[in-house]
Each structure stands twice: as C-alpha cells, then as structure tokens.
Length: 82
Image 1 (cartoon, rainbow, N blue to C red):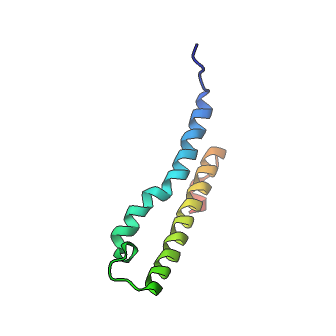
Image 2 (cartoon, rainbow, N blue to C red):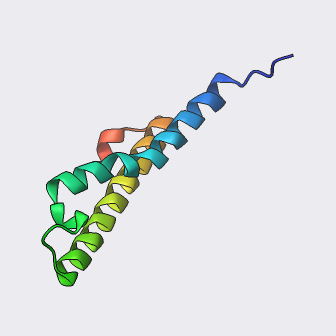
Image 3 (cartoon, rainbow, N blue to C red):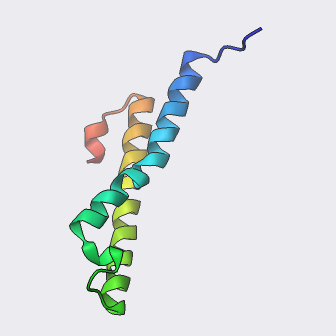
C-alpha cells in the first residue's frame, strides 16, 4: 500500500529544497571570482573582509529567494520584491 502525497505538498517541498540549496549553488562562484577565499595570496584582513562579504551576499540572495517564492505561492507579483 503506497501513501501518496498531495500535489500541493510536493510543490511546497520543492520550494523549501530550492530555498535551502541556493546558498550551496552560490559558493563555487564565490571561489571563482575571489581566489582569496581559497587562501591564495591573502592576508587575515582580506580573508575576514571576504568572509563577511560572502556571508552578506548569501544572506541577501537567500532572503530574496524566500520573498520571491513566498509571493509566488501567495499569488502576488514576484517582480514587486526585486
């Protein structure tokens, strides 16, 4: 006997997975565009500055993703949040 989830629940799971994975998608680009994150030719000040910048950027992208997905689920206009 199989338990079937409703399509709405499956849809919500996809949105949650996307929101959680967006940070992992961004990390390789941070390394490519900023080799100091891999400790290549860096100083402690530069590393600290880069870590703070990367965290702020990932937080911003994650927050934007959450707002956009929330508006789309509610039937609102997602372009209003951008």
